[in-house]
Length: 353
Image (cartoon, rainbow, N blue to C red; front, side, top):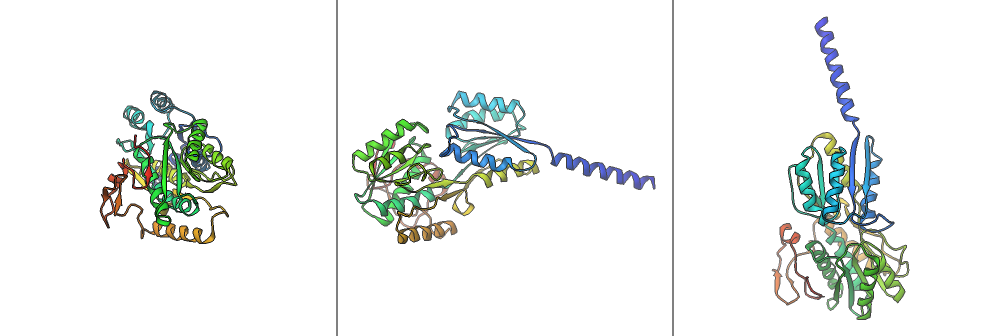
């Protein structure tokens, strides 16, 4: 009898201990490169933060407008020292600082967005936003009257160039002679610069403005000139309702939930994650009523084909700006090549520097 009671007591203690472990508060930190605001890149990530904050036993916090480099390292160190269980750094330039801090805090899980470096306690993640870029390019190509699309772009890195190329290919699929003109701002978030860049594209005849920027300033510039625009990160239609046609958008909530649950369960592993339309991390905002029904139907049909894997955006033949074949007919480049893409497809006007 005493043996049985001892066994039952031990079992009860084990269950209680397991329950307490499951209820342990998980502290999750986020670092943003721009102000959260009410639209754009950091806003989309913050919506994901709010999504997981509703989970039982999870508390979150964030620091916004953190410059890439030494400042980001300081913020990460501060979070790690305060005992955060998971830290998400959401800009490309945070990669090396995060790797440095991760090596100092092996019990903390670090997740870097859009980079490629790994450590035993540091993973990276991104989404195949180029898929949604292709679809938005289809809309832009169908709506332009002059055949000139303007693209306000942040930095000449593979992530941005890959998106521009996908946008151009989408536009060319419905309008073969269309041209995409690119202007670099060399900033992720600077509404004044973004707006001026958009104006410079409008001055050379662009009648649809697209962007890889955090603010809706390019959208506003397009509306002021009475032309169309393609947003990014979030649905920006409220900022330029007479101009905004559609936007490639992010939905980070389910992914952040997945990571947090893995950490809590002890099943998290360092890896590179790159999901697309099929997982819902990337998507297309609702299309404006200004987009004709037949165009909308064609875009949605293509979206289904991409989601199911029946259509792959970067399927050859694809030529670069000089006319050289970069991807042979029928060839689909591996992810390694896509992640390192540093050239423009034919039809894109602009430098890669």
